[in-house]
Length: 229
Figure 1: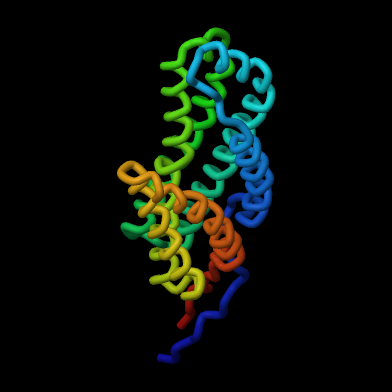
Figure 2 (figure 1 turned 180 degrees about the vertical axis):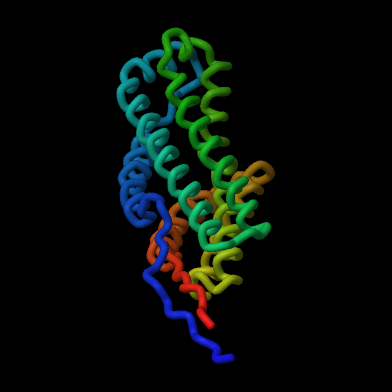
């Protein structure tokens, strides 16, 4: 019986958004959200100062919250598309599930940060020093270690799952793992505030990884025509 080699037919493409496009959309939201958020620090020593500061900077605070919330939405679509593409390519492993968990929680914490910061501009909130301190703490913990730690889970999950199955080269997998480790070490911010410097390291280096995974993670897979005897 003669064995016939099945010819390769045109590739089957993943039906989802372009990862590179999502990364490029995410960048300006991240930039403006981070820039506006870093430009103010609400004085909470006296209610009068807090009220006056929020009243004079409410527009900046709202816009900063908007950009952070928008970045979370775009990032969530990137996370969901990445995991969906792994499944499309046949990956059914722990890394894919870890990426799903990390991506979901990272977006949730980032949204918590945006909404907590926005809440400072609501009437009467700035008049309560306790409320100001609590909302500022939620804003920091959500956009800081809460976001970074879960971002690290996503990076590690995708990097390991894609790298071990040879869907991306090693120069994409290993930096992803190293950046993920930096994100996880940011959890020590809860013990020593100096570890907070790892938060921007993980957040901004992850952008380079996102660009790399956007370019190297396949969006299509070839399929074979059934062999005929």
